Image (cartoon, rainbow, N blue to C red; front, side, top):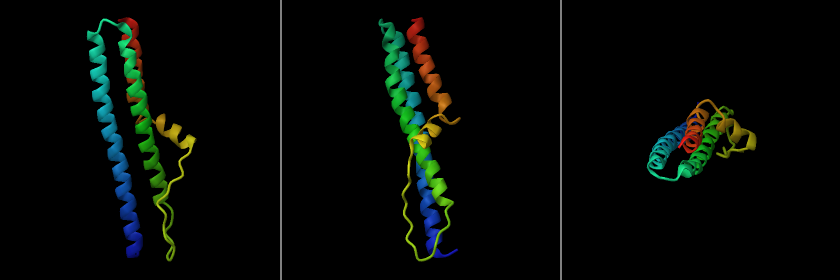
Length: 126
């Protein structure tokens, strides 16, 4: 493996690691914000206050799916063979199918589906 190819692999690995870290951070923020909103909705007299937790849940879900989609696309990019003499472009081609595949993946859906279910349940029961 040439130095150029090795550098390319290192750059792609750093990008993939950064995307995975962003996804992990988004999940942490989602749990914190959604827990705070649902706990606050328990104290409020308005029973539909828990529905407000759906907005950040959808936003975090979309962000998490975006980072997972980008991570997957860069993984596919790293599998392409490096050709000598040709500059490599670090561009991905996101599609709606790739986004929805990431949004409903087993690593993303349980957290956000549970958050949405709890918000609806708390709003309905209260």
